[in-house]
Amino acid sequence: MLAESRRITRDKVRDHIKRRCPDIALRAADVASSLNVSRRTVHRALAACGETFGAMLIEARVDLAVCMLRSPLFDRVTTAEIGRRAGFSDASHFTRVLRRKTGKTPLQMRRASRLEPRDERRAGCGRRPQPASPQNFQPTATVGSTVPRESSTVSTSASR
Image 1 (cartoon, rainbow, N blue to C red):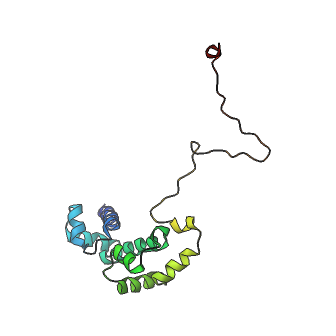
Image 2: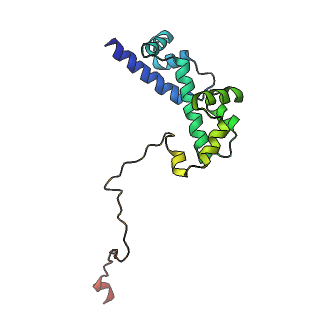
């Protein structure tokens, strides 16, 4: 039961970090305060799951930066600015961390993503693919087939 509550706390901490990772000054005490637990409880819950606050924060920032580097929406934003927006305090630290985590520099990652189709560039950045549903299904006409048109009824009384 104690292990389960620590996993729940860890998941809450992870969600909170993902939401607030762009904040350069984010600390474990801030997250603990938001969750109404002590800073020690945050660290204890993460340690029980083999994680640390710092590692979780860096991971969230790297994930956010990778999404921005791959997104066509950020093509005109410098890599240094992307690092800053992801929560890294300076460009060199951002470059070092990204290279250590992904094996690529920010510029290499951006260039590699430009070779991918646009749909793949957007994948994995907070957007989940929508499952096909019968309401959204629209059959397409094949060559040689006819598509029925909606018939409009004309009132015969109006023409009299």
